[in-house]
Image (cartoon, rainbow, N blue to C red; front, top):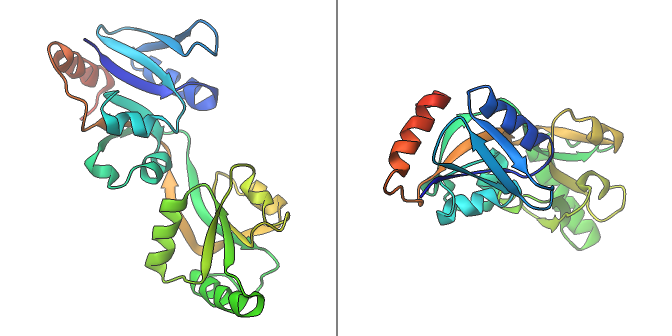
Amino acid sequence: MSVKLGVPSKGRLMDKTFQWFGDRGVTLARTGSEREYAGAVEGIDGVELVLLSAGEIPRELAAGRIHLGVTGTDMVREKLSQWDQKVAPLEELGFGQADLIIAVPACWTDVDSLEDLDAAAAAFRETHGFRLRIATKYHRLVRDFLRRAGVADYQLVDSQGATEGTVKNLTAEAVADITSTGETLRANHLKILSDGLVLKSQATLFKSRAAPMVNGERETWDALREKLDLE
């Protein structure tokens, strides 16, 4: 038996995760081609590397199929209802920082806050006969955020591509999306609402509350926790 560690399978998140563990004496490496999703761990015995997409890791943690996983705070909170009952955050890793925000067209000079957005949404529905559309990939987080803020008369539309382009393409009137610098939003003539920060996210090491540790897995986990200097 082994402690299963889920890590993003490609890109900057994988590279940065490998670097974070390597800096602490645990070497993670992909073995084989990018399509094989096979990996190896050196520097500690009894840990198995599982390469997954960042979006799959919350589900695998919640199901107890992996013990540990690295993914964004946004992914966990979007994909898992009552997320804190299913996973425990162990350590923020200091990379992958991004903000989930609400943005509207920059030309909406009288819409700067969520209260303004609520008024604009009511006026939009009265004028056009349908609700103002907000394009997003983060339905759970955005719906809960807008409900708490008292914003009504809107509908969320799913965005699978470049969310920032939906306003220009006339498939949405506003967006809720992840941004690091805001440059893409500005390039698409969008502005972030003054109180439109839904969530600050970054890559985080999570522990499953559902994955049992049996036989030598508890000893392996204790050794890994000490090596990584985790509480």
